[in-house]
Length: 423
Image (cartoon, rainbow, N blue to C red; front, side, top):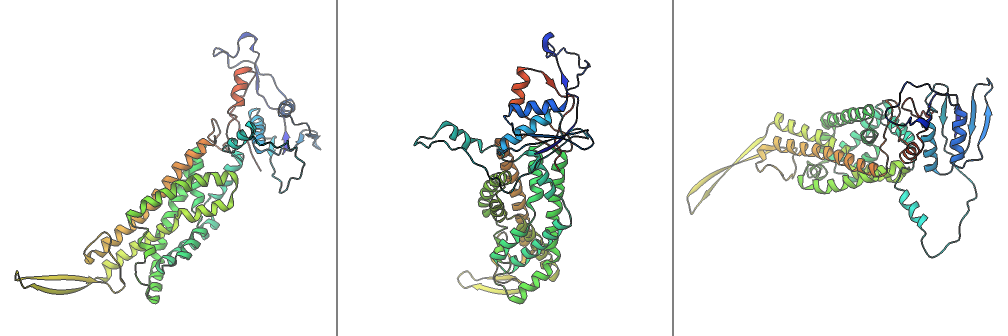
């Protein structure tokens, strides 16, 4: 990590007269504390002695370089630096670089048959965030932006999903899930809620809503082409089983369990950089195909209304009771061997497809809500929620050591709320 540092102005309070009490005058004179001294104290407390110090060519800045192999320790150092306003001022900055390979010798203790207490603590410690919160924030905030690349991926995934649904191809449906970028704005909502960032949450909600509307519109518009492809291939049954199973209410229970556990694994995958887990979650959640399926079924409902139905009449007579009954049958040329779910009378095909489409959209909404609930809970457990932050960049405050340090000494109090800028 390389730092460009200049002097800032945190308060230095003399507690000899009880200045830490609530009755202290907030307008007391401030004593200027050099950043150099703050950085040296932090590095000494963290037992970092291999730091390199140099002076910039204009003789105005210190440049400090040091390396840390433990990500938890790095996060703790960053929080302490931010506490002393390092990275907040215009002429100070913090740059964190993660090497591709780190080759060094590690001291290994003698192995014994008993699991040590430190090993158990290290295992439990893996529940904590494995990445700096600012790093996670920047990555998710960038990926959740609605730009041209995002729109192209979304359109391609929606078209592929529409074709896969009408041709009853489960493999191509899985492919559309991999192409779908719909998880990115959902992650913006999730981490925006955890980090209490209104801008990030609003951005995620807006982009998710726009994405779902686009998916439904693709099903309504491109659905004409997909409908023609299904008729040309004479896909039977039609609507296909891939379309129907995403609109059945009885399939919601299984989808709820999948979405709940996927929300848990998504949080762990992002904070630990497990790409394979993210790919698996993209397949298991199945957010985009039900949204496209909703639009296509709404199209079928409109087609059933506009094209009209062919009525066939059949008259039957019961010999014993001498009762004559006339039965009405409604047939549509493009409905092939389809078993109605919500309606018994085939003449109500428009309502049937409308209900299936709305159920499919409810499935998407329910999955998103469960992802947010379970993901928020996991991030809460992982101690990711910050106590304080600014409007631009959020971070997790130094929750344990900062509290203990403030209660023990009450020596330094920051003037502003601090944050970190990474570039």
